[in-house]
Length: 545
Image (cartoon, rainbow, N blue to C red):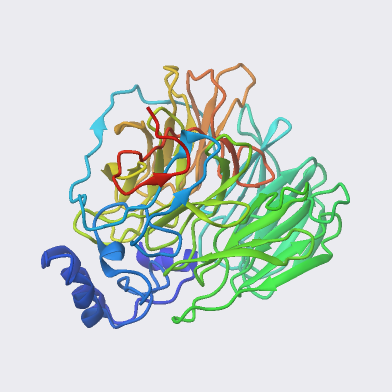
């Protein structure tokens, strides 16, 4: 599993397997008091900042990041400067998202996360399945007219010049293959992801190409060569205000491209740096938001150097940045969490940091580091996804250790539940599956199970497939009867459509947002998060009742 996944995320090797074994042993068996744990990690692993899962064996602290805040076993709300001292004063126009800093991260440490509870649901009935090839956690599906569009890796994840690599167009109601658009060129023809606007599908490819094709004729409209493999799905936005959507996507060499959607002409590009392990490049897809609230689309993108950046859409100028001590593989999302009409950014770093940031300034509104109960790091490749509710949670998939990996339900100040599933790299979609008026997260595991999870920690198995699930599911009314289906790609090469009884429009129907342009926009999400019970919290608003 590790060797295949290393190919997928194209990260550097672990280094010495002996060091890895020692560091893991330290994390899970020595049970040393938290105040001395960072020193042991430094002795075992060497000093420095780790770039992210699969890039170095264990995390380390930096001088301006207190060791106990970094390596403790609780989800912490941390001040924007990364310190745990002092209080963060938040001025809110709406108390819905009232969170603030924790002054002493050594208090009330969470050493036990509640397990999920069994939830009995009838297995989903299969409507159809079609062979499309293998997929990854970056794969996107989209509805186009009465068809389903998906780009895949074809017969294998590693083969070259495979005839099955490309974009599949299926009849939504039946799964019958209508068209196949082969990846142009030679070499590694795997499709990273697709976005759709009207009759045009935009794609990224592992043979260092970004392109566009007609869904009607299958003709390649334009293609642009890049410096490295292009693994993330492209995002679409009108960057130059000409009324047509442009393409934003980064490559593995660290260049983020903004291309004219009409002909592929370069509007601008920027190149990111490397971290101390020489890791670079983009694995995560970009998100689109109007940062300056001037009516213009801007770009949020994170790279493996650990820096999340807001770029001005018209010219690529840096507007703000946030950096943590690991790389970024999870794709950022946009949502209005506090219902003030202004956007926030939900982002994650590979060593378990999860943040909600003000989209206009990059200032953290909420920041946590997810860890195992024993203090071990959690590896995040899939993107955390919110489930709205009176006590909403983020569904965070983890993929680092294997058996100890799974899914965490993250609340405002604690890990609400944990489900051990082995590796989970897919991101959740969100819908009211059983018609009870509350949302569930739908997510697949690399063991091939399709799961439903509630905000209070109930877990149901909806289906078991013959291949691992890495791609996020897609919720769609494929036949127009008013009931929603769930489409799931598994790595036996099949795309399977399951029937549900759900009549309610999904909260989040697909990876990278409800629209096929991959903006990462989740809309307004009410989590019900407050932290007024924290003695150190301060706010310029009056206390909540």
